[in-house]
Image: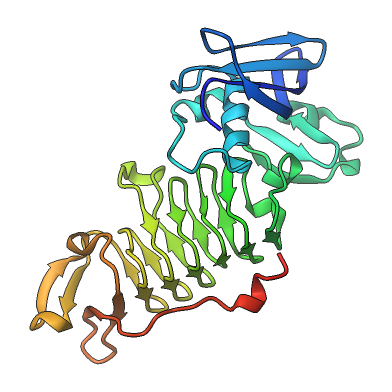
Length: 289
């Protein structure tokens, strides 16, 4: 799918504005400008130019387009989305304003899943061919490729995701894209573009393994492994064992393929060397998605 796009759906709103939008059909738009119209609860939104977000219907449309796999992470302009979307309580009775919950006499009759600007993805979009153990840990706007498994401790932010098939037991932060046949071990972490002013977009190549409780602040090429418990940031000093123990910053290895990153258990040095073997996912875990 490509721009211009017309989307139609059903909107839920109150006197303060939109609470949620359930888009159900998408087609080519004949409009000249971005905008939306509302008749009762039926909303039509036009996305003509990919500009910073100015309204809630456009924000929801872009999140839908990501979760429906029409666009991959970082292909749509999501600037301003945090200032546009309100913070809501996502409950078993739909989205509610925080102040409504505070004043509700029957508060105990609500089950609150999260208080956030983004709803759980599966409340609105369920991609084909995926398994998600805890749906509250995947935000709307996540991109999950076919064959992806998100385990109980796995988390996928909006504008982030997997090409599929993938195994995710760690955290995929905003802006991060993981290519096929890679595994993020339990408690592992990828540095996103939201915190600390980080502008570098992190990618994980094909056939990579992030060990349990490991993390990366650089991109990995294909067929890379990061040892369990090792966090490699851009400034980490790394000893290259295949290059006469040359010491470089990890940033110089950004995107390089066939690398093994580990900490020498005797000296404590962070080391890297070329890999000869290839990591492979357990096919049995993904064939039944």
